[in-house]
Amino acid sequence: MRFALIASLVVNVFLAFAILSGTVLHGGRPPMDGPRHHGDHDNRGGGDDLFLSPRAFEDLPEEFRLKMREKIRRQIPAARDLHREVWMKRREALELMRKPDFDEDAFRQLSQEMRTLEAEGKDLMYSTVLDMVTSLPDEERIAFAERVIEQEEEMRARWRGRIEEWREEREGSRDMRPLRPMDDE
Image (cartoon, rainbow, N blue to C red; front, side, top):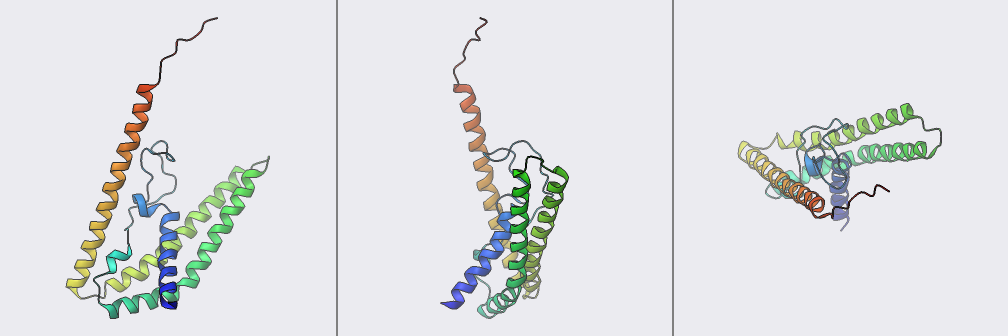
């Protein structure tokens, strides 16, 4: 039971960093359209990151998975500290936004610090996992890489489908709006 809780925490910490930085769902870049994303700008500076789900690790040898869990478990305090720092910076940014004399430069500085901390957290988890995977025998390493690529392609295909749905909904709602003549009175 305790091991399951720790394993769950490891996965949640890893996914939290990935989700917070937007990489799990769309490779570090926001979709071009969607309910929360407008335009094609991306000021987060994200790149194409791997999507690692627990399913990617299913076929790895049990002994290897145990070693990986232990290595990741040792990274949890550092990851938790980074996550806490990001949360505190977000809170500070919100407090800045509440002030009538909003300091945009201070806000941008906080935003940059948050991106840096999120990247450090992501790098910590990715490097831990991927460093260990490189030690696998060729056959297992290749199978792991193929599973990750397959999962990433599935995720991207789902997002492409959602983007198309959002576009259709948005364009459909435009076409169905009644035209009202302008009153010149």
